Length: 263
Image (cartoon, rainbow, N blue to C red; front, side, top):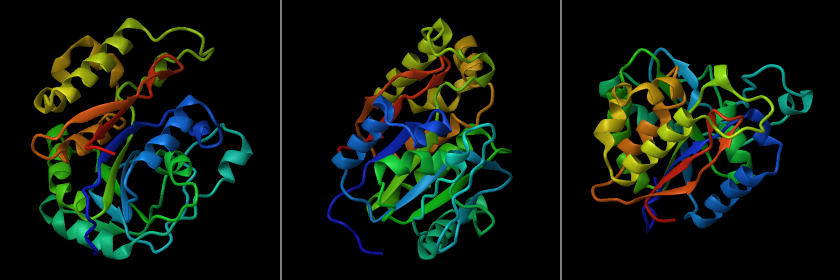
């Protein structure tokens, strides 16, 4: 793997609705601007909330399929494709580096909407190879943070570590009118997490169940929160974080983004 002259930042993005793949709004416009401000990655390692399974796997295909892992949306969304290449050599390299976690290359997945709905705006030419890393649903939060720590060397090899999920993601309490402000507990937890990210208080974010009722309501299931821990784990010693985007969709879906390192 060629080593670039500068370290890649790492990103966590609240991806919101799959419809963002087709829309041009303040969130998707910001994703485009964020990518433009970054060094160009030679590859992307995506950790999406939607490959939530048993085991730690990496997509190994030369051309990963676009997975339409949703229902109830317009047919045009299911026809959308993100025809980027994969990088089997990178998948094998990462699996080897994560051997202590039982990682393996797996060819029965592809790029799900947690990855491609963001990448279609960040890199619309689909000309950067993408490997996706699964989230083992059976493991505790610290396990995911420790995988993130093991991913740190990739950032010095031109790989963009990209987590995609949502700090607050409660589908059971959404405001389908999209007209009301987020409930107090959602805003409270989003602000709490942002503050602790900026303060590098990672331990408190790993132990998020201890953060009270706002955390319980914001994270009814851990799938959308855990990608943040992979990104935080990849933080270099003393590295600053920024919050390049904030906001909510439907009241209880946070669109907050986190960036480690300078663009």
